[in-house]
Amino acid sequence: RHLDLFSGIGGFSLAASWIWGSQHELVSFCERDEFCQRVLKKHWPDVPCISDIHDVRGEKIGTVDLLTGGFPCQPFSIAGKRRGSEDDRYLWPEMLRVIHEVQPRWVLGENVPGIVNLALDQVLADLESEGYEVQTFLVPACAVNAPHRRNRIWLIANTQSAKRELSRNTWERREGFANGSCDDERSFSDAESEQTGRLFKRGVPANISASRDWTGQTAAWSTESTFCGVAD
Image (cartoon, rainbow, N blue to C red; front, top):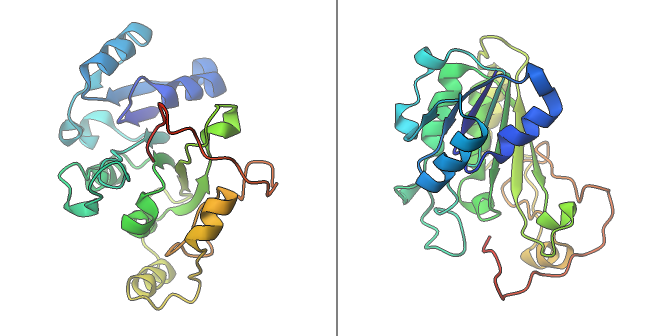
């Protein structure tokens, strides 16, 4: 059972259908853009689409196996004012609420690299507080042969506990990290990030790692063209 939040034109759901085939049960979309809604309706005519994330209620949906969502990037993107949690489009708390209510075994999320310094710490801490183990990755568009870099942060969270009770160790890690005393903290410079095209991990605990790239190679990627480019 799959709940797809901030669905866009259904990329997560399409990929899931490729993997699970007839076993993939798509419970609902959540998408407010009218054009995207029409695309979803065309390809998944029998799947309901909820327009507003605030209207997604766990008691109506029930538990799911997979929850996906590319929650809004505008609060973090370099194309905007980067107000983070002060932006009224900061909808991570609503996605977290839905996660708490539907109790997915797996969570897959996506956002722009700007989230690293503005909110990624909080996102990871929130998921840990719900009993998840989380791994973060940077996968650029060029990884699937697009002609530009377009870095994106991906997070995968999994829980083996049905009730996902918060352990003392998890709480201690969260408290220590929030107070700036996490011994596992490490960082990479902006220069290194730009040089290699990899995730600069300021504030990300070492046990939440990102692959240097999808093949393990260290070759740098050229930056995308400024003409018709896509902002991070």
